Image 1 (cartoon, rainbow, N blue to C red):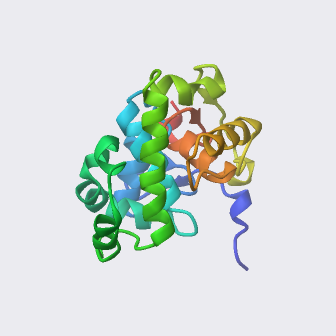
Image 2 (image 1 turned 90 degrees about the horizontal axis):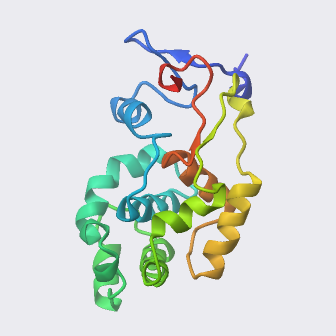
Length: 198
C-alpha cells in the first residue's frame, strides 16, 4: 500500500541524520536542505535570484531547477537585474535555445519583467526590507511533525503575492511565494526531529 506523504515524519538518511520528509537522498538536494533551505537571506541580489528561480520551477520539481542553477547564473549574468532588464528580443531568443535552462518563453520573459520591477523597488530602498515587511522582519518558525502540516500558502504569502503582482512581477502566485519564503528563511519550517531544526 502506498504511503500517504502527508503522514510522513522526518526521515533518516544513510549518514544517520534525520531530515525533512520532502528531502530525498540526492546529494544536491541534501546539500540544499542542510545549508540553504530555511536559512534567513537578507541579500537583495540573492533574494531576487531565488524569487526568479522559484518562478522557473512552477509546474516542475525543485531538483530540476537546482541542477540548472549554475547555468541559470551564467545565462542571466549572475542575476544582475540591471543587465537582465535590458534584454531585448535577440537575447531572449538565445536564452530559449539554451538547453541548460528551462526553455519556456513566459518564464524567460518573467525574469526580464521581474528585473524591471525589482529595480523599481530598489530605486527607493532595499529589496530585502520590502520582502521581509510581509512578516514585519521576523522569521516565522514552525516545526510540523508531519509533512501534511506544511501548508501550500498562508495569509503572509497571499499578501506578498498580491503586492508583487501589483508591482509587475510574474510567476509569483501565493504557492510560489510561500515556497520562496521557505527557501530564503522568512519561514523556517524544518520538520520536528529534523537535524536542521536545531
